[in-house]
Image 1 (cartoon, helix red, strand yellow):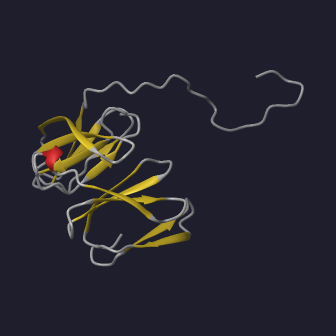
Image 2 (cartoon, one colour):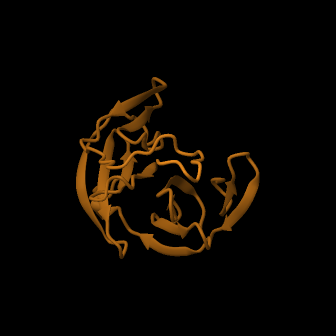
Length: 169
């Protein structure tokens, strides 16, 4: 994503371009993905979160989340699908916000708290367990317990392989 150019270029794991989404807005200040269906782009131009469907590359919704985040100057965003009661995280200067987004893209505030991240553009990121935010002044990344237990009922290892026809799992 280029700050001034209204497009998102998609790459595969080998670094090859396999798609481009041309947008009707620019000044992207934050981006998240649900790892299945959607990319979420936070635009400074209209202060909305634009929802882009990965399969079609079409914008399917916009989310006006600012009131649910105390009208803070949110830049960095993260979508955590393992947080069904509050998937969207927003980063403001020294503050994190969590909001829930329903199936019709309506939002409600879940929690907010102070963070050591001194800039709105330093995260947030989620590693599957905890949040991370960056500090500009001291070039430090901070790991923050988000207070949520991510429930994973089934784990499969190895994640790929072959089983012979006559063998049991």
